[in-house]
Picture (cartoon, one colour):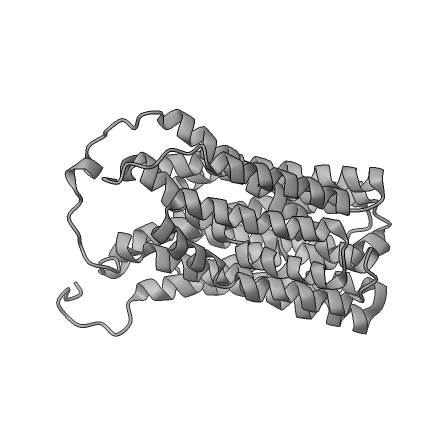
Length: 410
């Protein structure tokens, strides 16, 4: 048994954070966000229509939605470590399959399975934060893990254009193969480093033990809890629907509608990754200071400006400002939502509430890209979809004003 009074220079919990960040790098940064970089070349190679591009993305999020519903049971049965490794192996196999695909239907099926793998990896990774870190350190740990997604965006922004320059029209196939090999490598690292809880290593969670106030222990009913939960869910749905419309199609927009080379578009897409690295941490701290309600309003306002600039076609400078704003707010809403459910519903109901609003989010990101693809096919441009996204996030700013002030005793 480890001596609890001994001074430790490095707690294994931070190793779990490192392995978790690598897992998110693979299951979200590569498996999800690299798709937008690969899409222009895939469109050419497979002769995809705009609506088919949207349906492929929609299939991925439908798979993620299914994983959100099934993950709790899977985690209870197999524990987080095994679930994460198995999910990363599924992603690896499916990305290799996509690299060999010859039709829209093959890609749709395989990328849907990638979405299932992404959900089965992402959810247990975040569960590990609660196992390894006490309340005072969980926000920092989660913020550091989420940086893996931003690092994946940066990586794909440089890698994919380089492959396409060197390998031509079929470079996207090599792109998927390299991403698959990286996912395979990360699955091995995750299997080696991850542990389900500190007890496996005779350790205590990171952070000080703090007494829980009686009002947080008691199962006190929150007035209007159901209505508040629906309001948060609708806001999370709007975020899911709009941020992945942009994330899926902005590189294609730069190449097709602005005439950027793939290398230039990739460089600007990497800006999203750099800007997003501290997105969750920065806006989480802001919401600590001005409240979750104000924090949500600020983030949705930033997103509205980003989508409006992308849809206005004012200038290349306006598009680049849009990209920066999108990156700055990319991972802010999930961070604030995780804190908001605790503020409004108390710690005893926070986990269940967050799972429920995550279903809203998954529905939004499933429907959004598919609808945007249909709109783009009908109008011949993605600008209409961006303007629709800006209208939705503008409404979300107004909806945040309807949220009540939380019980400060929570």
